[in-house]
Length: 255
Image 1: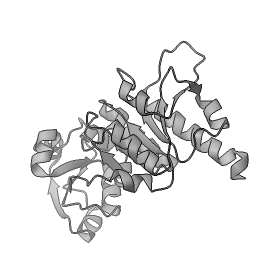
Image 2: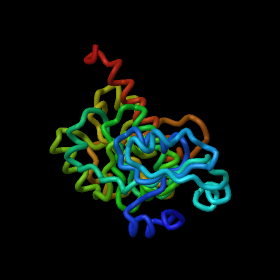
Image 3: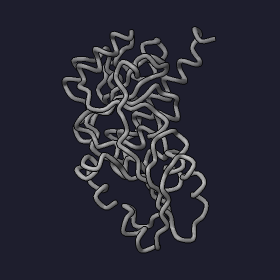
Image 4: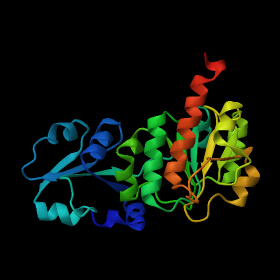
């Protein structure tokens, strides 16, 4: 279990660690293959759900749970699942709803939060580029709060491949950046972005790449009237997804 704390260990084992009641419950009910569940000795509540999917249940002492878990104060249940099978770009593009691309997002909390937000807004899926945080990282898994098991996620694609797949599916690629050519509200009002848009959000430190700008059909900025220079990447993703979806639902064409 300790080996699953590292990317190397996860890849070697072909498995990853799911920690906490919400994430474990989502894994058990999603159809994902859960192989093992570890619970505290006094907890009898997980046995039926775990055994119904063929998972082995092991009861452990509190100090063992603490040694196995990644968090300082574990919530009493851990599960082991095989590494998730990434979705294909084509399958994502053919689903309904916007798509979120996370380009070079290194912070696991931001990646997990963005995946959770995309799930909440009803996105078709999320694409995580190769140099972003591993979606099986414990912080990512916990930050998704179970959405990792609800939403199709593609990994490792290049921006060029994403743009090609988007255009083949009659989707546009919009890059969210502070110096975008059009502000978000104007883009929504004009119908330039909507439910079929593929949104790309760049890294926390460097923003979007020149490659992304070149491939984009348009660059969109989020208006800011305060003194802040930029927004957190996960917050930016949430804003563009929700504003664009709201605009789509309230536009004259949708009525």
